[in-house]
Image (cartoon, rainbow, N blue to C red; front, side, top):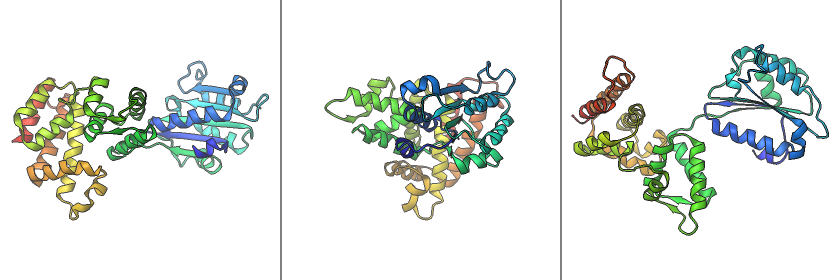
Length: 329
């Protein structure tokens, strides 16, 4: 991004990976910085991987190569972008880029945006692209990295957020970085005096209920509070599979924590924020190694049942009741 802002452009950008947020950001930066609005009229070509008109003969890559070989009109550069490249049916057609990269048009900047997956770096054309241009892999963030992303967004907008509110935002947005950015930007406009975002304010603004979040269920299980756990599963709107994923991540980390020789390094090894360690300390007091091992097995079992494996019962509330009973007993 620094290179782009300094007008230091590469002849080809291959942007790929499971996290679309950073791919979108880089494409937006390139679109904004290479050409002026007037230059874009004649020198910006955008195609899409699932463009049926261009992909009629399965050769959309041939089309973008033809686009790239043209010369710019009254501009230093022309820009050719293939968006949603992952939707191209025949992935081997990208191999044709090897021939273009042997003698690229020096005034063309070619951008391939390939989301939700990666292209084999062993491909000859990928090796050439890596040598002469930019190959960027946008990886999914771990939970603690998402928290760091939230804090970075807050600092950027000179905001702060309570720990409970951070947990609620994680519950609401998961790893959707674009949604997190949008929510923080909304608060930067709404809050003029007090710049701190509380859980109550987040709930009021987003319509999300803290009372029945998955993290509340997790806390109730750690505390052994049978009544509260059952109240939550009766009123939660969260899908069962998302609840199971959240609980599985916690108990898998708890198992690691229980076997950890040096618990002073827990936040580093588990990749969690310092304030979150209290839940693992409490969990270690509540559950033994064997209990935690069995709970992980229950979560796997009910993940399968929630998908119709081994049971004809698709009542999510009933399945959650059974799961909670087994965890607490």
